[in-house]
Length: 328
Ligand code: HEM
Ligand SMILES: *[C@@H]1O[C@H](CO)[C@@H](O)[C@H](O)[C@H]1NC(C)=O
Ligand SMILES: *[C@@H]1O[C@H](CO)[C@@H](O)[C@H](O)[C@H]1NC(C)=O
Ligand SMILES: *[C@@H]1O[C@H](CO)[C@@H](O)[C@H](O)[C@H]1NC(C)=O
Ligand SMILES: *[C@@H]1O[C@H](CO)[C@@H](O)[C@H](O)[C@H]1NC(C)=O
Ligand SMILES: *[C@@H]1O[C@H](CO)[C@@H](O)[C@H](O)[C@H]1NC(C)=O
Ligand SMILES: CC(=O)N[C@H]1CO[C@H](CO)[C@@H](O)[C@@H]1O
Image 1 (cartoon, rainbow, N blue to C red):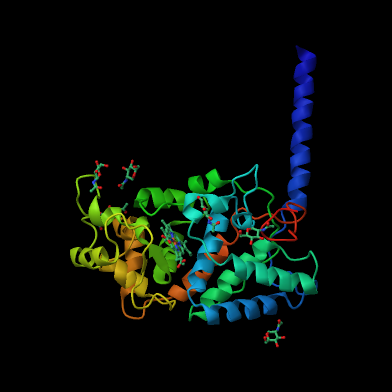
Image 2 (image 1 turned 60 degrees about the vertical axis):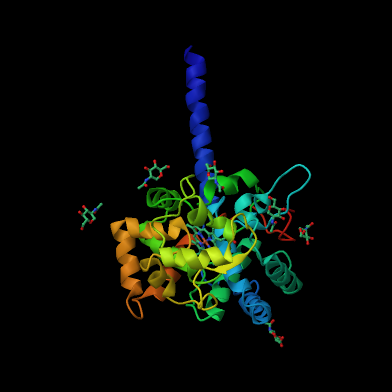
């Protein structure tokens, strides 16, 4: 008995040392200007390309912000959201929450422009993070420095998207738990939910609140009844495909009006309304709903940088993909 035991202790130590060494090699932090010497034109190419797409189709800006969120919450910000399914693998893209992700053509255009200048040096995960920033800035939102140096993952699994992305019907307890599991706190939840100040939703994401909330043909009591009347005009029963603006009238401009809407009980999702059910998140909603808000842009920038660091691969982990929609 003694020999196997000794051996297993030895083996364990070996494993530990090995893990430490591996971690040492990979524990590089992201840093601003990571490509400055390797690929000096990278950030300019991203800005240029993103701007040219968004000037043609402003509605891509929210889609590109959401893409970064969906990338980071599933396996970390590793570009796994970009991978196509194959005959042997159903990828994140084909999970239910991803059916409505758009803007992959922007990432592909940036990637091919960047590859021409700097072959196999810049990760798709970094492109997603930078494009999301530029998209927000281009529609009057804040700007921030994006720490870079992410590497691309080699795994993308549909079921992990479903398991890691908070659905629109989550309550405040579930939302806080989801964000905490990614290292984000309750303030980050309140701040990043402000991303819903831009963009659209399909009726299917909230129509339960209009027609059959608890299975008795009822409506969601936390939604303004006058607003329900308006929403029913846009989403008839069973209509999954029509779209509505989440922040009507100002859905193309990044501002604080999301919080006024939530405060008026007109947040589109149960997950938006849920921010009123917790002291910290409710206080944040009330603060920003005051005219002009208070520091929302700074907060949003800070929380985006934090979100952008979730589970990143650095150093020798992962790879630099040649094409963003397929692993090498
Ligand atoms: C807090 C939990 C969240 C939930 C439950 C949630 C849920 C949703 C849902 C259901 C949609 C509509 C999809 C559709 O029907 O087309 C949506 C859209 C959107 N979400 Fe979220 N989201 C959350 C957090 C975030 C975060 C953290 C961000 C970014 C910081 C974000 C940015 C967006 C944007 C910009 C859109 C509009 C997309 C477009 O116009 O194509 N969301 N979200
Ligand atoms: C940005 O676009 C303009 C016009 O399309 C072009 O002249 C310029 O060289 C581009 N810059 C970069 C860094 O790609
Ligand atoms: C949130 O949902 C969970 C799961 O359905 C439930 O157990 C919990 O009681 C709910 N919490 C609140 C505050 O509604
Ligand atoms: C409402 O939900 C209940 C329970 O899921 C279902 O039996 C009923 O058919 C639904 N009603 C409508 C109008 O969809
Ligand atoms: C939230 O605020 C209410 C009223 O101010 C207070 O009674 C309650 O204890 C607070 N809850 C938490 C979790 O701090
Ligand atoms: C991934 O799918 C998109 C859309 O169907 C397609 O345009 C692209 O070429 C695919 N990528 C690869 C590497 O096959
Ligand atoms: C953008 C994208 O890839 N959407 C896919 C999401 O998943 C469904 C299947 O569940 C596909 O049909 C979509 O093409």
